[in-house]
Length: 142
Image (tube, rainbow, N blue to C red; front, side, top):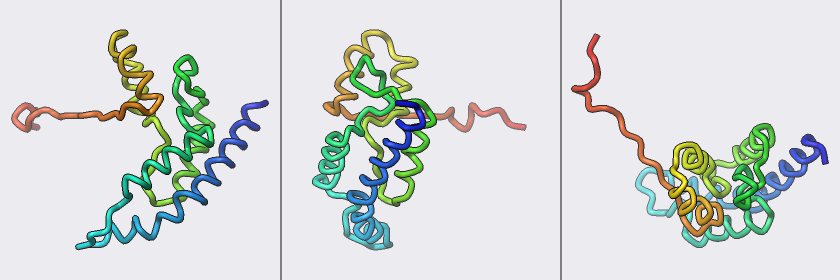
């Protein structure tokens, strides 16, 4: 299968996922964004369903390394995936969250990679990242 055919196939699968799973959640999500709203953005049941369906459809670990169970798709294909996901306002990223995965892959020690990458890619562990900036006093003044 050529890269173009693979990209088209994955784009179509993600488009169906967006149409069937995300777009129906938009009214609830939009209500949750109204000032004073007590509607939840997405329930834990919604998030679990989205993760389960995405895994069933083979949309898990799309750009994760193949040796860790991912698909290691090229940037062009991932751009098509993000274009389709961008058709919905519902904030859902296909697991695992690639920027954190790639950060761990780039700067993690071998021990950290061994301990965290596989469970992260398999969805048994969530990721988080913290970024800080220097205190205002440490910033040079012009």
